[in-house]
Structures are given as C-alpha cells and as structure tokens.
Length: 135
Image 1 (cartoon, one colour):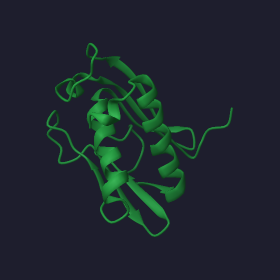
Image 2 (cartoon, helix red, strand yellow):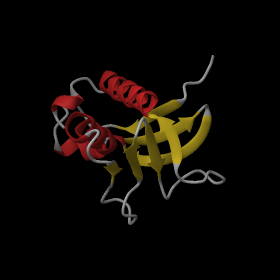
Image 3 (cartoon, one colour):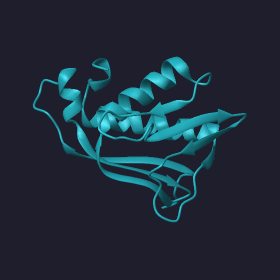
Image 4 (cartoon, one colour):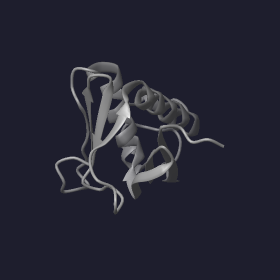
C-alpha cells in the first residue's frame, strides 16, 4: 500500500462515557502521529485528541488560509505543540516535538495537507459520532 504525502493518524486510548459533552472533550486522549511520505515526523502517545481535532476544525472552517494553525494545550509548557503556516501553495509544519532526527519545519503541498486534515477529521468523527457538534 502506497503512503500518502501527508498522513495524520490517531488512536483513541481514553474516551468518556456517552453521551459526549463539551466537558468530556478533555477526556478523549490517545496517540497522534504525523507522517511525511510515510516517514514518521511527529509522534505523541498521550495527547488530547479532541482538543487537537477541535482546534484543527476551527482553523479549517474559520481561519484558513489567513492565519496559521496553532495547536496549543494547557497540558504542555511549549508555546505550541504543532504550527502550520500557509506559504503560497505549500504549508510549513513545525513542532518542538518532532521525532528525533527530523528537522523542523516540514513542508507539504497545501492541497495534500488539507486532504490529510479532512481525512483525520472524518475518521475522528467516525470514532466518536457527532463529536464535531460539540466543538
């Protein structure tokens, strides 16, 4: 199976009881991985996936392409966990948490990154139906 130029993969480890509420979003934790041409560039085993999905969805629907995507979390001291900035037809992705040996930033074609974001959000919604209505 060929890898996509950009992949955003996740695995939910902890999830709240149904029904999902806004307060329960902070309890949807798991593993988040970002790959570039099949090579792992970002991997975090304990991240609030709902927080990431909510911020990504908000950026895509409201701020894109005028503002960069910045995933920040109260759980971490860094000013951001992941930042994506649109530059012409590309997106520059950076993180203080890149996998060892990966230099920041990584550059993706804009349309390939947006495809990966939409795929991530759709799969996340499949795992937790109607979660997007909460965030």
